[in-house]
Image 1 (tube, helix red, strand yellow):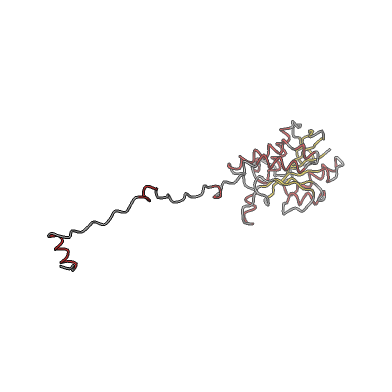
Image 2: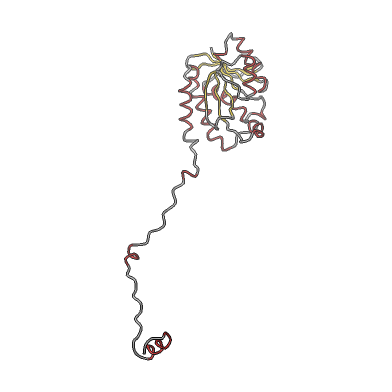
Length: 241
């Protein structure tokens, strides 16, 4: 048996926040693999199902993010599981939007939900870090994670959640690298940048046509040597008489 936890904040007003992408991942897995309906237990919502032949308990703590460890810790103790049986899905501001990284152990990276988990179950659990991007300055982080995904994000977010759900069995089997590769391949086309480097190079100046290049220069008009005009020109320019 394994415990998969998606982190977030309970309540409709938080449902589309970047901070709730862990809840979104848990919901996607439950839908795709026909888990049982969500029910209240362990200060959270749980659903049961099977991935790659392994029984999975999905949990979404309802304690609010900062107390997530209370709910997850209670579930682990009830099922007599240790931290190595736990996989946690959560938002990561230090990863570009749509990037996913999986690792076992490590620090909280300033994430309050992970900090709470470490206090209650230790550090030796698997972390599925889902990139939501960084706003650029520290002062904007709170509003960024507690803000809704933009409409333009849905193009990659829907693909990401579908892929997490499709390939969650790889996590159940412990094949973290294959899981990350599947996500990367699925999102590659959606996240390909289209910046200045993709613009066609400027056109070279138009070359002069060979006809114009070959056209002979017109000779200077020949001045008259006799007659009234010749006499006038000689007078003006001091020509010899």
